[in-house]
Length: 49
Image 1 (cartoon, rainbow, N blue to C red):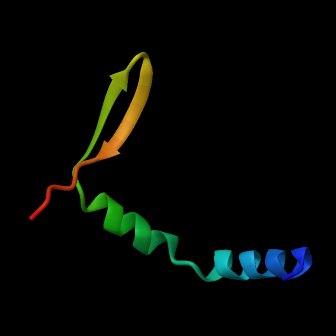
Image 2 (cartoon, rainbow, N blue to C red):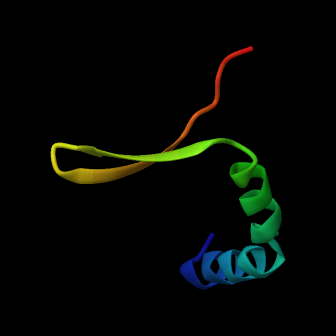
């Protein structure tokens, strides 16, 4: 695959990808913030069944 072809594929995928649906799925999980060694960490907690 050439670079121009791969770039066109990425642009097409970016337009058709439903980011809002992904956001909704992620936002369904509990989310938290903490600090580790001075760095802010945002994480999602998903418990095993």
